[in-house]
Image 1 (cartoon, rainbow, N blue to C red):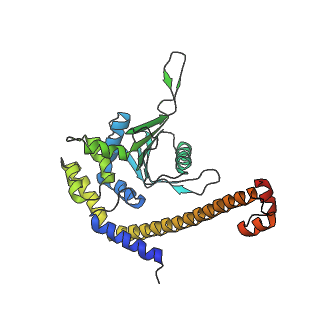
Image 2: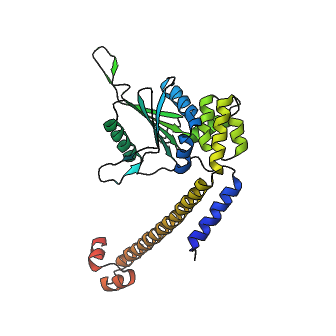
Image 3: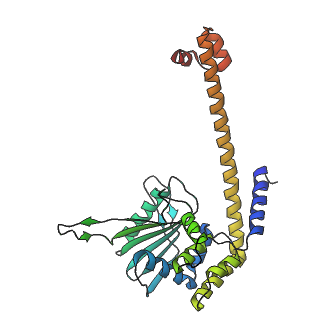
Amino acid sequence: MKTVYQTKALKLLNDDLKNHTLLDPMKDIVFKSILKKDETHLIIRVLVKELLGLELFDIKEKDSGFTAKGKNQRGEACDYMVTVDGRTISLECNRNYNNSLFTRNISHLRRMIIQNDFEIVQINIDNYDIGGRDKLIYEYSLKEKDRKGDEIYENLIKIFHINMPKLEKIVYNKVELSLFERICMIFKTRDKDKLEYLLKGDEEIMNLRKAIEDISSNEDLYEKYTKSELENIVEAELMAKDMAKDMAKDMAKDMAKDMALKMLKENVSIDIISKCTGFSQKELENLK
């Protein structure tokens, strides 16, 4: 028998799937499936050209990622990693903000440095503004200047965060979109018509569009996607319920405190106040 939360989650998911013709690309399982396909080399090339100014030709290896383990942290899988032209590039999809985001990213970087002798690049597709400065791209790197003023270590580690909400604002107000903007908007597109509009062009771009559409038609992936989404919705509902309980407890405690303070001002006995508010005599002495 389904719980109230499972029933509500199923309705929310069904409504979501009815309103869209594509699975959510910002969901890890879909994000990884898109990048694993051969037709998606274009995505990697366009991102690297825009962010690093490099033309990529030789993509030697594609990998589904690895597990990074930080101090006192359980292992978490990297979304996607590829080794191209002497560089190790990690792509991360951050659908929701959480406090462990930076810790996880640092864990991934540490593992990449240990396992590879290449230059390290991490590209994050973020569903929120990570820096709070309303920028499209946030770039972080390790660098220092020598006595001549030349930068050293500048290409050793680079971290990019692409602010998708900012991109949506830019795209909304533009008629002509750059290839970079079109490619990035793939990860915010849930409808075939919009995807067709974004990915009009040569054969390579058309193949990319077809690959993304095929992913949403894959029955095995669809089953895993729905199961994962249901679990996430139920978990969010339970978390919201727990938060509501905690807030109610805090409010009740605040009300009891106000009552205790008023009774103390009226010189009501400590014993009576304790029975009415639930505070111990020691707590009431401290309040007094």
